[in-house]
Image (cartoon, rainbow, N blue to C red; front, top):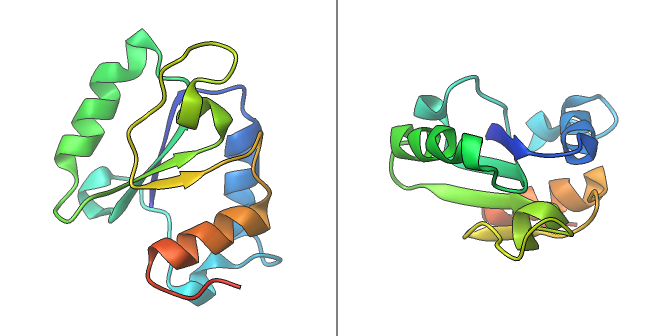
Length: 117
């Protein structure tokens, strides 16, 4: 996973980072963070798409190898929240403000092809 914050309040980031903690341990499902989109299978987008982040988002998306998976995490990424009416076009939608870590983990396991909980 390559997370990209395109304009959040930070709540989704906090919940998302918890997936790496021992309590949730996403690595047991073969899910890992990467520091570059060139090594990512999925781009996790958090927040409302701001004008200043459109180019960074496009570059991250273009750098990812095929097949690409875009995951919209949280209400702001899905619908723009209270700030916009535009959401991000995504393959996987994870609703919530912010979504709980178990909700995130379940959606990621299902996106990977597992049964989830």
